[in-house]
Image (tube, rainbow, N blue to C red; front, side, top):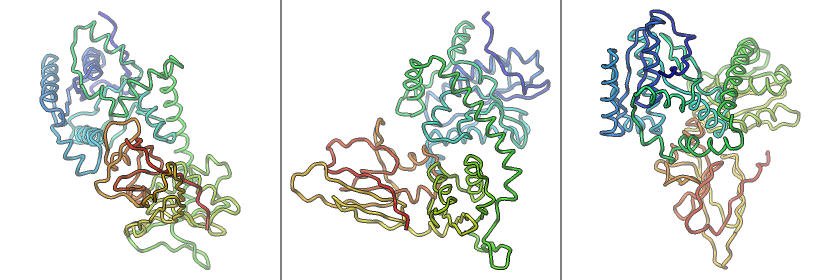
Amino acid sequence: MATAPHLDRTHLRPGMRVAVAVSGGADSVALLRTLAQAAPEIGLVLSVAHVHHGIRGVEADADAAFVEALAARLALPWHRKDVDTPATASARKETLEEAARNLRYEWFRALLSEGVADAVATAHTLDDQAETVLHKLLRGAWTEGLGGIHPVIVCPKGVILRPFLSVRRAEIEGWLKNLGQSWREDATNRDTAFTRNRIRHELLPQLATFNPQIYTQLVNLATVARDEEAYWNTELSQILPSLLLPGRAVRGGGRAASTHPEEASLGMEIERLPTLPAKRRRVIRAAARQLGINLNFDQTEKLLTMCEPGGSRRETLTAELQAERTPRELRLVRSTLLSSAKLPEYTLQIPGELQVEDYGLSLKVVVSVNDGKAIPPATLRSPRPGDRVELRHSRGPKPLKEIFSRLHMDPAQRAAWPIVEWQGKIVWMKDVPLAEPEKPLPFEIREQGVESV
């Protein structure tokens, strides 16, 4: 018999009750068979956990029956959780992928908190890690995102383990075939309408023609990024308490914090901020996180520029977050009152230019097809419920909430994200490449730098 895939035993201990998450796919079936083979030697007490997501009808029913039969053949206890993923996605305004993942992990944590298991093992592989890191990189993630899939997630009660992170998917499938063990194939895993699948089936194989070790390189990057994050988290825990000052400085010394439940602020003395850009960037982002906002790269760079001599005195970063610079401090103010009012709409003449402080945006529209006829103006506005756009290289229109989820935008950013509508259709969206319309537009929209007032 061929050797079983390598199992990371670092966090497995005698007597540990491990619920193995099994979808029925090759990876999870191999993890279950490998753990079942190693359990007597290590001293593990195994059970099988399966989530029926309520998405794929009879195929999902067959997956559940397959996993239940496998658990019975291995004489292992079986736990099943039925969820309504589409309804949850709609209620939470999440994509199906997000809702499915969140529901799975909510149940895994429930198994731990209820004392059903000491650990839940999931079958993430080296391929999954490489795909995740590349996906995060394409979305503009910082090093915390580039850390990818963590080998261990510590929960209030128990842990979630990924013992297959060093194993390639091809090795797993080869071992199962040699073993004579079947598995279930999920047809949606080959649907390239999903970005993750395009990365798996198109982008990574193409990158492998440039570097056959691309999977290993991405996994190595994840390891380095996690170590970097661990270092910075320790560093920040030591310096942040003395750098972040709640509220606003007042005459005569001391600070005044807002008593309004919908407003909070933090100040940082500019002279005390670290001089190194990397450390200063970390401090600024940590300050925003304490106010419940995750800054992107451009927003962080705006704040760095404000710290420099001659920097602007005020910036609107999101619909809820503003930055103010005094001679001594950089201050972040988060107020839901800022975003409670609907942002105004603006008429965009064609051709024409428009600079709007509400959106932190300056647009120029130039005519590309001139047949002598006047072109009706467009409208610059914020998103509305039901808005849909078609992305470049995608199939069919997608709701804006799905686009925003992919870009990891918080609700405040979504509410103030600028789009341009013309003739009843969204034709431009900041930082989002839209598909070319069947009939070319007679104009081109260009974003310009915003002049500070």
